[in-house]
Amino acid sequence: MADRRVNRDQAAIDVALMQRVAAGDERAVAELYDRFASLVYKMAFQSMPTRAESEDAVQEIFIRLWRTADRYDPERAALVTWVMLIARRQLVDRMRRMRARIKPGVLDESTPVSAALPEDSRGQSEREENMKEMMRRIDSLPELQRTVVKRAYLGGQTLRQIGEELNTPLGTVKSALSRALTRLRERGSEEYAV
Image (cartoon, rainbow, N blue to C red; front, side, top):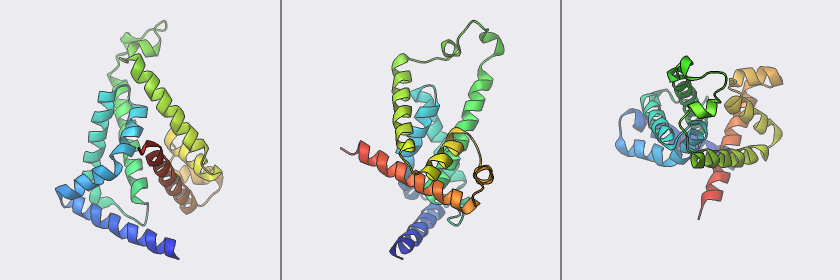
């Protein structure tokens, strides 16, 4: 009972925040950024080839969050889930645009893909280490949560597709994703707390 009240209270806080963001309230935008920037940056850093690309992607994501703030619906998803879904979409779009910029003539069959992309080895090993850590945290989730996260974020499937393939109601899939993202965020902040 107390959990439902807390969830309802948090949903009301989230709706009020997003209404203020939609209205252009700079403090609300700063609050949204403070709340989710590290989570969004970790996601971007694992996806983008360079730190600069990651930082640019984070800016794009928060601009998109600001522009679509009026569309947030707590009945459909928790705010953290909504933020992560928008971040994922933006990152996928950005990666597609980056791939389109690589001219076909630049790569021939004897050139490894990694040689064609600008990358410093330290950034690559750091990203690999971050990915290993994230996968370790994902693998520690309960089975349904782990499956939903992997299929949605690593497999690129929609929640509806996941529900159909697992023969699981869409609401259950959404709840599993929301709980998983909350756990991942909590574990991440515990590990990075000094």
